[in-house]
Length: 152
Image (tube, rainbow, N blue to C red; front, top):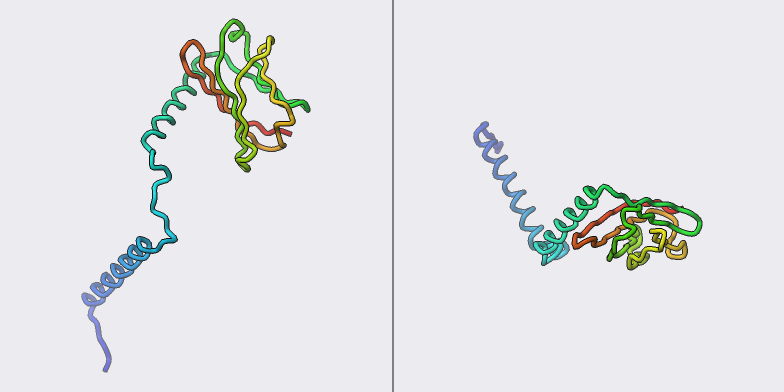
């Protein structure tokens, strides 16, 4: 016995097979424990607000008009603050993030020398890519500068 389908029956069969595949795929992904359907963070709303604060503080730094210069040497990295900061009191932190190894991350209190320089000793650094996050408060306003440095 030979089964003969006309074009209407072929289209209907194609739709039924396609819908069956989609339902099988959805059922498999929802019931399989190896697929994790949890949120990255339970506190995503609060983290979004913190991220918006970071964006605002970066915009504050960009509108400040005074910049922080970076200098590398065999002794480490120097963060050189311009003369604008000479008679100002800064409170903040300098954080070093190593994208390839979180165990190397470091955090320092921002304490400037008399010549407005913050030194990061080479003993705290390994050669490669670093993200330097300078976060400080000046006259009640928060400022953030994030810079990528390739330390040799």
